[in-house]
Length: 307
Image 1 (cartoon, rainbow, N blue to C red):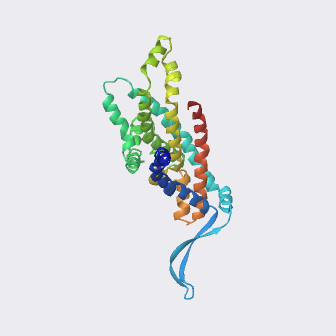
Image 2 (cartoon, helix red, strand yellow):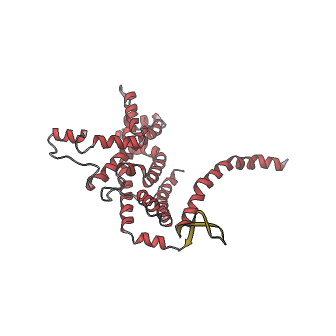
Image 3 (cartoon, one colour):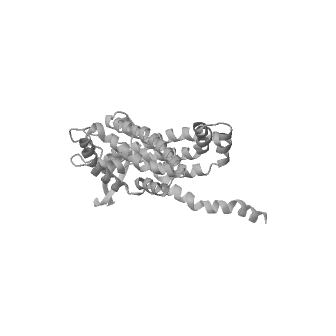
């Protein structure tokens, strides 16, 4: 009887969690360990021999020759890697704070009682729900160098006499990547933070207003502390998403012009499918994982006092 009670109390819970643990192991932990292993090897495609005497090749196989930290040494000495790393960190540093600030502003706006609120909510969702490929196509049409809407408006306003090649000019293209990230992800921040705003008891604001607190004081001492946990989760998720994002750059510029928008996922993809440097690319992936952990862990530590 005691054994049955123990199983019902503990074993059943572990049994129910087991499928999720298997999924995590197969699709997350095992690939991470495999990639870390590959990063210490020189990976090559060789002919697979099934008959030693006849030496007849039967397809190809991927061989791993252990070379230690040589791939990481090559990364350390590669200027193109450092340039891609700088672009990725700049993208995170510019896009994520802008997404959060605009998102919380949108959440505060949508939390008001406005006549056009339903229409505003629908419009705010547009940037988030459309596919990334469609969004890039829309931006390339709006910012087209010859007859794009933005260039036409600038000419009519007398603010420009030439045709700006927004995606083809190295000094501007990276800013366009940041703009597309912000336009897509700020609504997600806004609607998620709106849910957090609506969970804050109205009594807290009423009591603070009676005590003479202004709008800014209520925002700083009531709104932000209550959104802290949710904001931490959002920021962590979008830091990881931005560092790993491949689609925006691949579809919009392909890393150009002149390497001005090459980020780490693009650099990794080129190493795999252009140069077939699987071990070297695995080292890039390991660095990306380390960067994400380096950024995420302080945020988790910052959240601990809220537990």
